[in-house]
Amino acid sequence: MNERKRHTLAVLVDNESGVLSQVARLFSGKGYNIESLAVGTTDDPTVSRITIELLVDDRQIRLVSSQLRKLYPVHSVKLLDQAHSIRRELVLIKVHAANSESRNEVIQIANIFRASIIDVSVSSITLAVIGDEDKAEAIQRLLQEFGILELVRTGMVALERGQYTIDEDTKEKGEFNYGKNVL
Image (tube, rainbow, N blue to C red):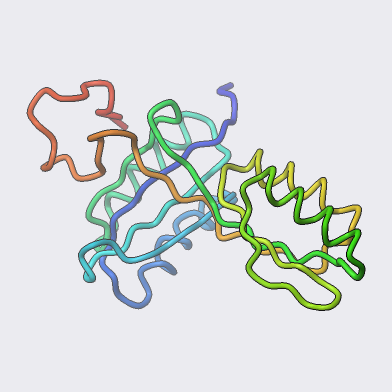
């Protein structure tokens, strides 16, 4: 049996209502749990990019990629190679900080993780952290002792490094042969 591992799919779709629901139904119908989902428009306002992270085996990712390609509003599906991708998510964390000592400690932790302080009140500090899941989990662990009042994560977004793109038409012929991702 194949080992389950994290796979990241980049999917270009029509920017229309109901498309995300159609894509999500494909996964739920197969019983796959989406670990992370992020959607936004691209440089073309008629096209959205969906970044989907799944914990599945190699056979399952080939199957779901093939089925995604068959959906009418889907333009492109690409399995991103972890070694050649940049993956980031935004995490907003509101932390209890009722006195100057705890505020100073939270600010020091924020500085270590290159987090932005985006709001300060009498009893709390809100941080914005951008990074991979290891960075998000590490700062979350450190801030738990102060009391996390609220936390929200956007879900992972990813791009391939260098000139790699989801749109095969923009590549030079013969360039980056590793990235064919034949599924």
